Image (tube, rainbow, N blue to C red; front, side, top):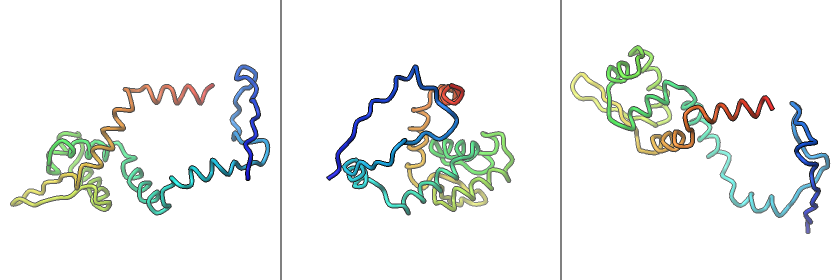
Length: 147
C-alpha cells in the first residue's frame, strides 16, 4: 500500500520560476493516483490518430477551410475566393484533409464540391473557437512565459 506524503511548498512569493524543467525533488509515486488515471487513459494508437488530426489542423489555411466547409459545401474556386488563396493552394490543403478522411467530395458535372465527412471536425473547431476569446489565450500564454 502506498501512502501520500504531503509537503507544503514554499509560498509563491518566495519562489521564482526558472526556465529549467520543474520536477519533484524526490522520487515518489502515488500509486492510487496513478491507478485512477490509468483506468481513464486512452490507447496510444488513438492518441496517435488524434495527434495526426491536430497536426493537419495545425495550419491556419486548413482550419479556415474546415470552418468554411462546416458551414456549407463549396468547390475549390469558392474556397479560393473566400479565403483569398490560389486554387492550387486550396487543392493542396484539401488533399491533406482528404487523406485523414476529414473531408469528402462529390462531382456535379465539371464541378467538384467538398464537404466535411461528418460534423466532428466542425464541432472540434467550434469548441476551440469558443474556448479562445480573441487573443486572450495568446496574451496570457506569453505573460506566463515572461513571468
